[in-house]
Length: 378
Image (cartoon, rainbow, N blue to C red; front, side, top):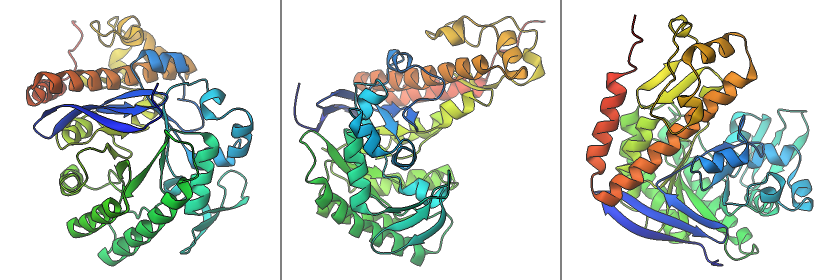
């Protein structure tokens, strides 16, 4: 076991990168998709199931965990890994995005942001130092600086103000992080909205401060995919090649394969779990909506060639029935299907990069989505 945190490059195919993020709790194979465990659980899944699907790392949410049950309580109970029975790497976000989007009565200053909980209205303060303190109490392996993420579209002067505040907070976050044990890492977050010059300014400022890894924030918030991909290209031309790159909150399978082709290593998104709770399955045939009445008499599984029992062994008719009856098993099975597909996609991407055939793999995957689901025989 190593006490160091570092990125180990293994292969490249164009801009697509194969590697490992090495932590004391284990290696994260990249490109990697991190299932989201907002409140110390991946909704609808046992930790052992998530691991068996191929996940090397989970994401936990600082904002939600600080409010309930509290970072101090989790620390007293042995830390987040023990609390949720996940002994492998965990990444925590800073809580900033949720403060800006969920909390009430926010007041932003140079010091930080004060807000009222969306749960009970209680008053809290989040500063760069407090965010790092909370993540340290949770004991996460990869932590995020506190930043301000503005909603797009936004005026360039507002985007510039937020990114410069985020750069000052990055410096404060780094100083606060110095007291944490060896083997943990703090990532800086690139902001700058949809303005290339501001993205460059943010990326260069973070590189000057120096971090063991870098996140790309403020994307996948409603802008066209082409804009998102253009901003990734701008940023990745600046970020160090020997550090991992994490695209926050992304996304769809198509977003992921396109971003991998532009040099992104890590992803997270609630999409596969949230979609599973809303009757939507991700498969190699594209998306399948199990609410549709056409599935009511269909005895076929979602994908008879899948390694996932939920996709291979349960009929579409049964899944449709569970959804129509609002049975929790339906959400659980479709969450399982979706997380299995995402991890299978990542495994395929890694194998393709290793073999120097990433573009062929991407074309094959997209062709499967375009062809769509095979209709049932009459």
